[in-house]
Amino acid sequence: TPYAELTVDQGTTFETSLDLVGDDGAAINVAGYTFQGQIRKSYYSANTTANLTITITNNANGNLIMTMNSATTANIKAGRYLYDVKMVDTTNTVTRIVEGVLTVTPQVTKS
Image (tube, rainbow, N blue to C red):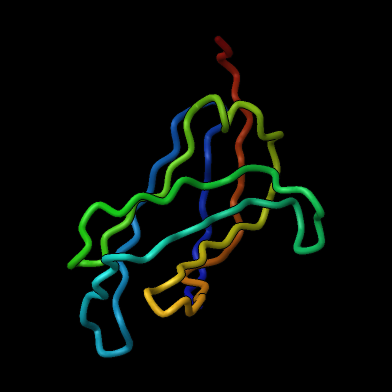
């Protein structure tokens, strides 16, 4: 599973892209696939800190965008978290496509 460290500025819109490729380097066509991403304080946390919204931007090229709106990030306490994103393909096979540490930096300007 690929590992990526992410930084989120508290109280801002977060967005990053994901491009899915197979072991052969070819893009994965994600037509009909579903995705779910969550943030938790630790692997053992019973509660989800926040959900990541995963949107397909191009089926054939396996392009996704992972986002959280500013209201969501404003409600996450500054600190280090863990996240992962899973996909379910058309045969109901579940695969974790990315995981890592997500650091939320504190905001100064508050609306």
